[in-house]
Length: 245
Image (tube, rainbow, N blue to C red; front, top):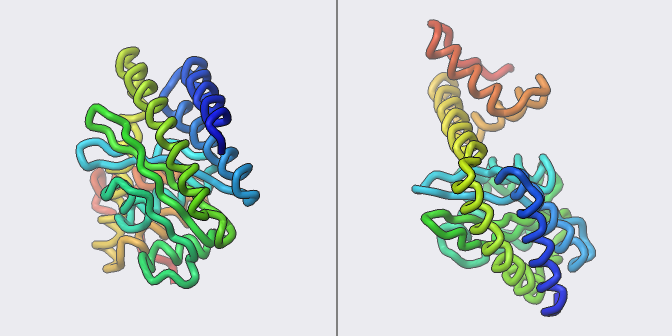
């Protein structure tokens, strides 16, 4: 990506913020834009999600697809993966080959099941106590070359400025509901996972898989399933559901 193209990209990001009413829509648009840009650069279909962090709490609020959002939330639930490491270390982290890289075995299993062969985490400076990271997913190995990573870092730098502006606008206009809701949703999901783990004596990965499977089977959002489990335990003597044999 050349300088003129990057300048044009930044103008489009600013236009996106100016024409969008809430922070979630901004992040959905930003990740869609990032996915399209990386797809054009690599020649491979790239999907993208963005995770925000504030006061050590993280939430995946926006993504270019539901698949990208789910994969990013799985990583946050596990607390392990390239996106998590990029957020913690402040530098890009590449998972070049899901099949051969020995790091993050639980998360690699989830990526394999979703048909993802490589992933890239790019940190962004959101400012005012916020942290953020772009998580890029590819169905092929090899698209995230050194030049592509450098280009993604430049894009993330632009996106960071746009994101900071979006957060300030949302705060000034008191439209931070989506940020608060996403953080609360994450807490409910974590609580539901804990209940399932305690009842079934299973790992957090297994508990989250149970939630996602129930979400898909019932065609309900993950948060709705998690809230129903929490409510059933808090409001009655029922226990969290067991896994089916």
